[in-house]
Length: 160
Image 1 (spheres, rainbow, N blue to C red):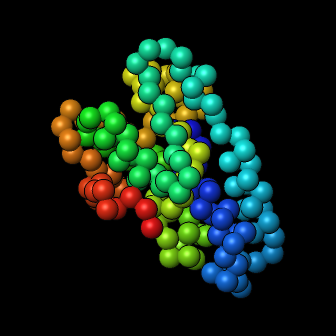
Image 2 (image 1 turned 180 degrees about the vertical axis):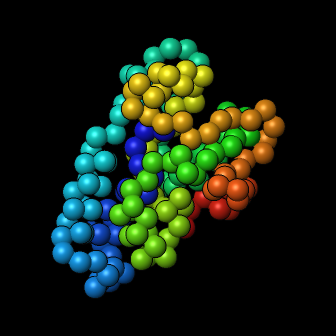
Image 3 (image 1 turned 135 degrees about the vertical axis):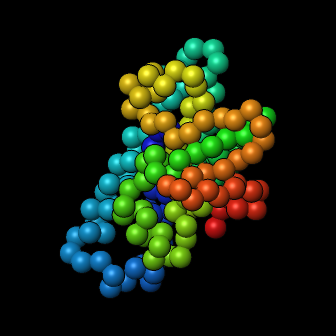
């Protein structure tokens, strides 16, 4: 995976919904969060140029698409199940806090621009700055792990 989940949502909350976080943060926290999230969105890796070899598929979250939505779409388009470890997903603490202020699950929040490379070359992924967050499965089961807890990914649970 390239990029940070929920960065777009966190930035949108800062810009468009000040009522949800008013009085909750001190000092220049919001200014720093905004700068960090803007930088994240502006510097997403171009995974297509990193993985030119045959057999690598690149999926990019579209406008309004959440991490869970992207994972579900990948599973559908690849015709397989998947397993993802949410502890491995890159996500900024400020994005989590802003989403919580707006009562949005950050994994169901807008993650526009993040890229997930489906590849067998884990070393190339990591050398390009990506992280491994899961794997495809031969069956059609789709689930995410958070430590010992397992949740199934369903079509109706992709965005908030």
